Image (cartoon, rainbow, N blue to C red; front, side, top):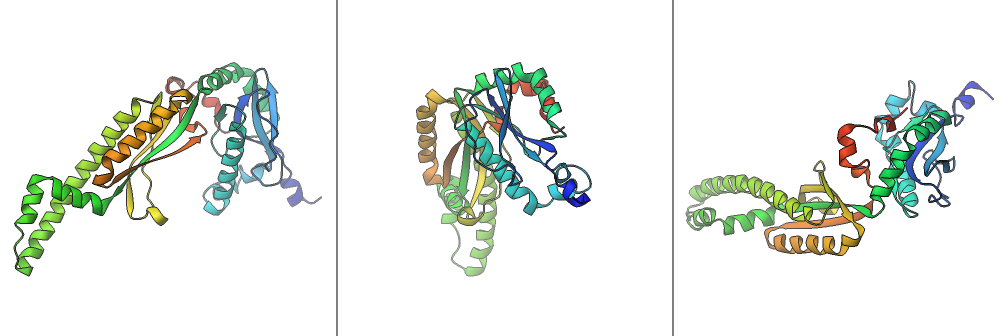
Length: 285
């Protein structure tokens, strides 16, 4: 075997998530590299879900280039997510961020020995909860039209637009600029109101970065992006509230969309643990 073949031997350990011991199930998906299978390392009440990987893909001179290459990252990130979601079918998970690799199994065993009880408590804490995504999407043209009609000042200015083409054009430009300013304020206020309403049915809410829309959503702009942790027995009320909020804003050009359940990336560990950074050892090693 030459040096290149030796370098590609799966000598690292890629970590996907933690689960309760005995709750991983038979995971038949391939690992992140598409070759090695999924395994579980059990210690105490916890199981670590992992696969073997060649270390040179995630560390060393090639790693930085790989992690900057969307063509390399995207399929691996998707496979990471598939594995975590498959494990989640059997019970609660503590998901680990993409790219968490250990140099061997020994550091992972050490982590389980040191943090197993804490991980088990987090799994217990999340076992009756689900993470859902809540997005607010604005049809800008429809919202601008609604604002111009609903705001007395803007509506009066539109009513008074002159008939002369030149003067009308200039005043229409000014009206559009004022409507644009009003739209910014309205979007901010609507996002805050929706978040406040959603919180009534949530254990925790995590604001996320707004994302540009593409494809069929390209004519809408995201004004709200939340991860929401919900008690499983409160899901009907949560969905009903989100539906009611969406209906209330529909005429104004804002729609509310839900998706989930997702692995609880944004709430594991719980907020109080995140603030204390007591699980910092879960980063790549």
